[in-house]
Length: 616
Image (tube, rainbow, N blue to C red; front, side):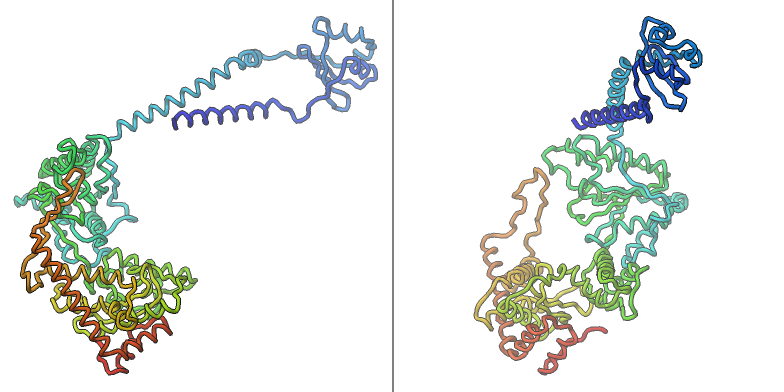
């Protein structure tokens, strides 16, 4: 229907252009005046007529002053006879130049045939356009199974990425150096009898730089880089994905040595046999073709397949066996030193003020991935541009950290006096419990200004990166999470919905302590919920099996509740013991809305409380 409408519009456009052209050429800017034969006779007798041009029955008259006129003669009588009959003086008639013109053969036939040929030409043009579009659609059908991979060639300096553009993944780069060496000189490895690596699987959390690292390998080796997402293989037609896989590998082999990069391979690489279509499922056929292509490599074909996923647990075992994706590179979230290196890379070309210390920014961003850090620097640059300033300051970077973590400030969200007071005591409860308990991260900021979905927040950041967490750490974190809840209950003897998110997070921590970390004395060193299956199409929806009895479930619930109640009791004891400090923090929040780390520590010292050391 769209094709037909397009053709109709094209035909109307052509007709419009032809009509405009015809009117342009057929119209004359100075149309001659039409007169009668008697007026012509009067003009000849008075000596005003200089020339008469006979064209058929038309008489084109030119006067002495150059004026043009037109009239018609009698069709069956000569002009001289007609004019004499109308009373033209013979001597005056002889002074007038008489000439006869006739249409040329081309114009004659054009005038005769154009009314018949024009409609036929328009109809023919319409069918030609329609046939051309159909032919184009047929060509698209023939190319439907071709690969849609994009290619970055080695000579494309604009898009080329090398290892110096990637920071924070030192171990991963060390692991991939042998891939670079093989692509540069495969004969050295083949001569010694080494088996050529075929597949490299990059595994890691979202934003850790898997795609960037794959491009860096191609840039270091100076080879073509074919890349596409796994979802681009799969279409609604069965067999298209497999055809595209064959075409992609064919292109790469012609350009070898080369790298094929498949992003989010879990889109097609999940466990086979999980769909309603069985072996005829399009996703499974695409996966089967990839497996065949990996096994079909010859030793002299220097083509490396790299794939990225953040869900390695759902991949088909056939993908991960030796000979296929037998190189597995894990990309972890960066530590403080790696975050500083990443920030330096993203700071290139951006104007920073002299007070900017990227080390302090790295300290405030634990758990940030490389993509988060890039977004952080970009948000700070946008903030500076919005305020028409020239340099990025530390305040801009700190504000952008909170924006990335929680969302933008909602300054228009004005709290009533009662809500402001409740929020102030709630956040003061979190901050005070965090300041008193050991093994809790230092408080960097307390505010009651809404940001994102949070009405207020207490920002705690670790002094150093940690991989292991103790039971006492989790118990103290539970008390901190319930500090706001306890403060509302203690001060107002009433509870609000403001603690809903705190309760959810605290419950998750307590349940993980019982069911994952073996930190319950009653249940002991047992982990539950390990037999988790992932749903795909026809997979049984009951596949999330319980691997413990109802009596154990009741015991788990009791232990979780016990952890929560003990944490609440601990938080209430701290708040009652240091009620004066709680009041001071809350009143300062009501007055100033935000307390930064330095002012918060000064306030604690004024009441004789120790402050936690934070690296400068």
